[in-house]
Length: 198
Length: 198
Image (cartoon, rainbow over all chains, first blue to last red; front, side, top):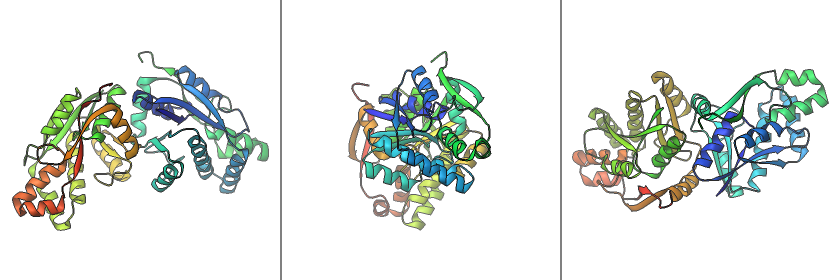
């Protein structure tokens, strides 16, 4: 059976992909893109290094614009990112009957609550899977055993989170400084392949 | 790394075991027993048929007695079962650093809330893993592909859920009829081995 994982190249979505593959799903990794900036490239590289198929699903730019509106009004990114994530799931559900992402038990965003999950599954006749049974400590331990991981400062080229296109669009509208206020520089972990023994 | 899964012989805990094994853990299946009735036997049979190690962890009978008190007061089993499950997790955490169970996203009981999970992990310095990222539809589909499953009416010999020792003790105290009022007859699915192609 086919399953898609919304994929950023990070540890969480990579682990989700491995779990599903080892349970027998034919896993395809999907990065949704809103036509503002080609932010899928880092995810694509990670996916191919792990030997997974990778697809870019194009989505309407207005979804990103609406999320950026929310974020500029709020002054922080959480609600806008959740908005985008929900649209990304809907888009994936048009092509796949099993849709997964790497949201962990201790993630605050992006995250669907139990009613949103039920509604998403029922409306689209899909199964939605997450990493909600796993905390960050477990994901970090497993990731260390499974993956080669690169730690580095996030920039526009090495990250495929929703953040990148949001940052790009905020930069266009409000300038670089507003963008950096909302998304301060931070270190990220990116999966660049399998750990040697895997 | 060692991991234990609280194990009943059902589809959920069996799937959890398979996921952890396929991620590289050395999985041991554990059934907690409160010294009232040898209810681990069905779980042990399922575990061995799947090729897993199985252990019975003995727990204090007073835990079961307290839970039965709760259940007789409530007139329904949920709170008492939750009580027992929390004790079972604590007992497992004395021997294992990774403790898992088969609770799904849509399970109501047994289930720990997010604060209980945090407290359980911190107090015992363990990692707690569940199937909370999966709904029943997904578990059923995966189980069909992975396991040979037997559907039958639950009785005292073919089931290793907490229910069995509770039923036994309620039967002793209040008689068979009270026990059947609280736990009506129902059909269960028990894992009896691997599906042919696995």
